[in-house]
Image 1 (cartoon, protein in one colour):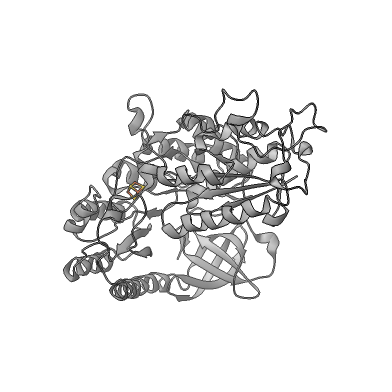
Image 2 (cartoon, rainbow, N blue to C red; image 1 turned 135 degrees about the horizontal axis):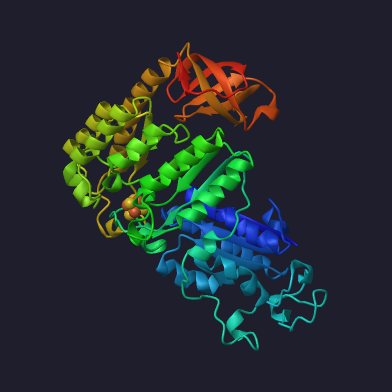
Length: 486
Ligand code: SF4
């Protein structure tokens, strides 16, 4: 029997989906790319934008129509706001928080399915579908009744109280790649930025035990993975919820760095996303110390204006942010710096925008993910007027993008003539080329049709540069000590 998952949103949802797939495949289901073929259909939802939630409604309405002609079970998990959850309960067969994933097989069994072998495609109308107690795998039938009304199951509820994310982390993911992986280290957020709904969809910060993180990392490295990203909504607040019981984020990085040194293995470890408020020198120092801790830091600024940062409830000032950037530039001068910025947030004046443009100029980011503000359902700012006209947001977006392109080009041009270490990630959009990333996540493409190189480290000599990418010539497949050689 087949399943299909629609995964919306950020890297956290991609990582969560890898665990969801593992559980479903552990039950014997087989992944299909065609949703029409599936008997089990799920969505890992994202509430960041209304568009994403509208997509979930339109999908489930379509799927529910299919139920008139075939047996089908639907579920939704991921970032779901309480108001949507109420509606989803009427539309999906199962609605559950990610922390309940270990109970997924039980939930499925409540529908009368012992294993997928028990799923019987039924060309009957929905009214003909009845729950029958499964006797054995062959005789098991497929019910569309929710668990509460299945005879004998009244004591069970599909929506269970959140038992904590720890059980979810125990599940080994079905990794999408053989050389790049995400490791969730922390879930939830206590920061309550006014434009963001994450604290309401994912709850408060919970840190995963360091021993488990290190175990998962070592397993991946032993399997030959080359790039690992530690994930969390507030990745550098790691350990703060368990003060005195758990190590800090910098200590966790230190243990990873030490393992990198002792094992002699070649790999890069990234993390996303940190919050400026919790970014101490201890984190920057440890990154500078160990080779395997990638010299690329993504540190969201969101705005360059202190008044705006207060309205965004960012809990950091531009002065504090400047100190962080200065520390990075001083301790890890070779590091590339990425950021996130929102333009056109409620009430953004010309002067406030100009302050953001100035920080772009000052910090010379290698990459900035610039969003034109749109109210996010469930976030505090969704109650405020979205008063900056669309064309103004667009103009500000273009102005910042131009500024960013200038700095990106300047940095990339400096790579010309140098040999850089890259991780080859796949085929490039340019015909006959492969695409790779440097340790600092600068795109490098080079001429080759040899797909067997994907997933390997190599040396490429850079010959040309444009904003956001470079081109070069493959020198050889080998690892070497520094990421950039003159
Ligand atoms: S720090 Fe702010 S933007 Fe990031 S997840 Fe928390 S509330 Fe959202």
